[in-house]
Length: 142
Image (cartoon, rainbow, N blue to C red; front, side):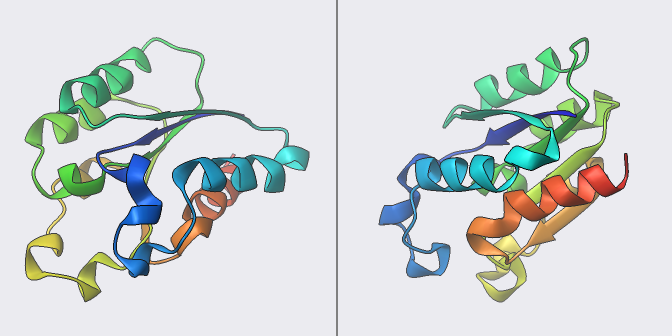
């Protein structure tokens, strides 16, 4: 299974953010997730962008690609981006939205996620293991 993993704004500075995110950098999470899934016969392609336009283009690039699924952590764009939601809606492969923290235990403005309505699955609050469990879930639905 070939999975694209898109990470949104500020995830490149994960280790500098609120302790609720943990102390690992995104690069550490990528390395750990790749290592934990090595026997699952998955090909993971990771990107991170602080640009809404780049995230939308990355989603659109999947429309006519060989990728089997998308895992997206849109970060703060989850709560604000109708455009990312629209791009996700067009994409017909399985889509999984992850959040490292439990967004419902945070500020009220984080409780509403515009992007969640355009994905097949959503998971939050699992910290650094969110991507791993999303991969496992996608594999179980294969």
